[in-house]
Length: 109
Image 1 (cartoon, rainbow, N blue to C red):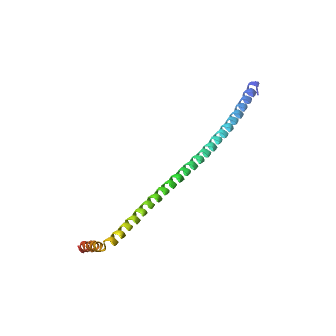
Image 2: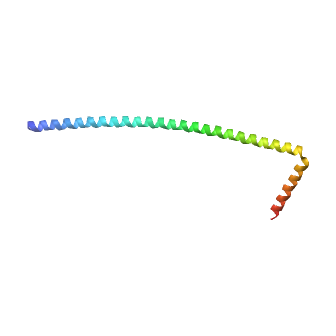
Image 3: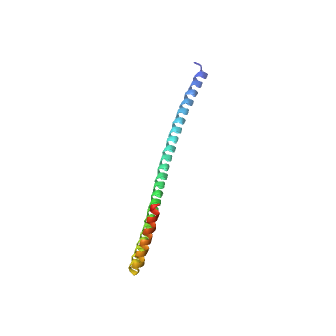
C-alpha cells in the first residue's frame, strides 16, 4: 500500500469512529429527551387528574346543597299542607273529593 492509501484508510477509519461516536451521542440525547417528555406528561396527567378531582368535589358539594334546598322546600310545603288541613278540614275534604272526582272522570275516558 502506498502512503496515500494508508493515510486515506486511516482518515476513513477515523471518520467512521467519529460518526459512530456522534450517533451514540445523538442516541443518548434522544433518550434523554424522551425521558423528559415522559416525566412532563406524567406530571401533566397528574395535574389534570387533580383538577378533575377538585371539580368533581365541587359538583358533588353543589348537588348536595341543591338536594338539601329541595328537601327543605318539600318539608316546608308538607308542613303548610298539614297546617291548612288542620285549620280548614271541611274545605280540605271538599277539595280532595273534587280532585278525586275530576281524576276519576279523566281516567274513564
